[in-house]
Image (tube, rainbow, N blue to C red; front, side, top):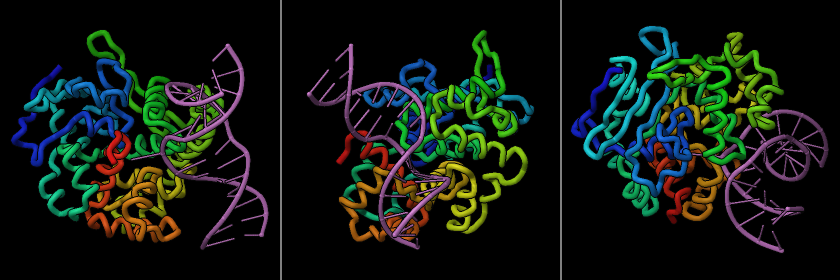
Length: 305
DNA sequence: TATCCAAGGTAAGTT
DNA sequence: AACTTACCTTGGATA
């Protein structure tokens, strides 16, 4: 295993690894201590987190293990690849300048409290297919269970990798996932999401469509593109745009944000997803509105008011 | 111990 | 285009 660290001085605006990984943006990382995912908020936050890089994203075309831990002053890492810092920077957006982003965001009381509480939390940049499947699975589901679904999908269908006697699994490719039957996926407790995941995997595997195709389109066109996948409506599309495809202005209108709008920004409620989305995006500052959304989401979900 | 409820929504059918 | 309804599963709350 290669190892190293990223010093705090290279992380403009600080870093909160636990909030970044456990805030419900990504379901493709795990806590190495096997503590219940989504149970760490009162815990301490210096656990190792690990993910497996898909073979399609590595220099070797093999899956690679990546582990990382915040030790209070710096981001330590261990990996089967020496390219770990580059992968960490991409996946956890280490080169985002949070000070600039916070400064560019409007001065709203709720937002200020959320920024203060979780200062250092970054957006993630998940692999698009994994992000797409994760958020299809997120419908009417709790964070810890969404995570469990992705872990089971990886274990059943993803590439295996053995390191120090332990076996890890990459999230499956569309080609690996498409052959699964609806019954297979229901056995993994996906419930009614099973046929959505299967049909979406088939669409990607056959080349009919790919989430990467949305990249670069004007924001609302990109969202519209993603809704062609089965199980993907406006909200899930916004999540993929924000957490995988670099659309930092995307504001997923989930139940928590809907509540926040009703309570704090009622004038932004416009009756339709499209118009409400435009209004709240404007209220949260436009270009980085998705960053603001993620802070508000996590702040409210963890008991902030 | 049994029952109920809600969880980061979406698709399909009606009006 | 706006409005209803069904949908799997399960941990945690309530009786």
